[in-house]
Amino acid sequence: MPLYEHVMIARQDLSNAQAEGLVEHFGTVLKDNGGNVIDTEYWGVKTMA
Image (cartoon, rainbow, N blue to C red):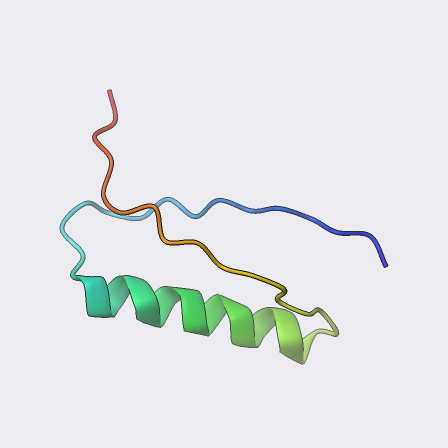
C-alpha cells in the first residue's frame, strides 16, 4: 500500500481541543474510504507570513 503524508493548516485561533477534533474527523473520513492512519504528529501553532 502506498504511504502518503499530509499537513493540515487551520485557523490560528482554534483551541487544542478543536484541532484534535479536526484530526479525528479527517482520520474518520480516511478510514471510511478505505484508508488507514499510521501516525499523527501535532506541531503546534506556527506563525505564517
